[in-house]
Length: 137
Figure 1 (cartoon, rainbow, N blue to C red):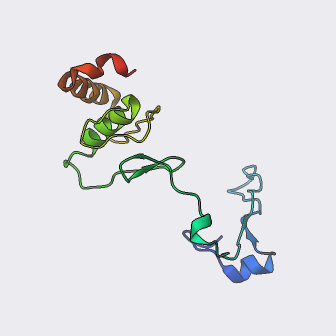
Figure 2: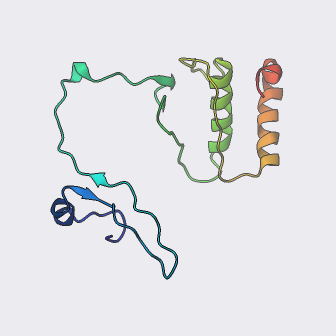
Figure 3: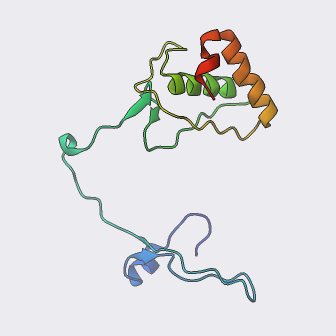
């Protein structure tokens, strides 16, 4: 396999248009099973009217069936924003001037803060908006 995420298209074409189906070894006794091959396919034009519309959940940046993330420098409020947006979607309520398109379960994943800090922040949001206390859990 080539370095990084680059695929040698000539090699892929020579292998029938697929890539990544070989077994790998990292030494004796460490062979990994063959991966499902990635197959290069040509772009096929679809008339714009035939494309399915995205199903937005909140504003214009959370879309059903997509993973969304908020990226910004540290200390500008990403965690707080994510918590309140998650609470808005989970309760179906307008908490920041945006009414969720649907009320649904959310999974809030935070890769920076420990659980006790997240509990503090969610609790602080619920205290700030007392009607949320019984609606999340």
